[in-house]
Image (cartoon, rainbow, N blue to C red; front, top):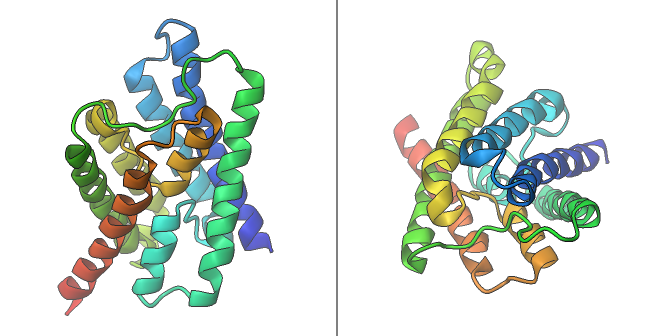
Length: 212
């Protein structure tokens, strides 16, 4: 149960601070800025990894949990409880933001700003490199583990900086579904539920090949 609570709290924090930054930016005329939103996401992910990494492994992402199963380093029976905890934490974070800022024009949802295929490919590629980073630093030497939060948070920050305006740079089904539920904008949610999973699983397959 401690693992599930840790996953829920970590995912809650990512949604609350990350999408909260986008909401505050929208209601204050851009005071946070795109760079500020990206930094908030990256730093929140980094912080939560250091807080909960030794408890649950700090997945905070259904795509990461599923990919770890395919890597052979996560039990299949734990996938559903982890994913449920992540979605519940994300929904709680978005729900609290809806309560605090009911008049905001955005809920921090991720939607393609241009082509749907472009967003799908971007989400898959971004998640591929995110998962490749995660699986290398999470199961390497002790020295690598010390820098895991910094490495993973940096990938999230970089992805959000350059791809955020195009596809949202979600890389996380829970991060996208919760704001979509709060806003009622579910039109493109299939992109963010499928592309990150495919990208993360592809990264594990690539990692296995590189280790041979």
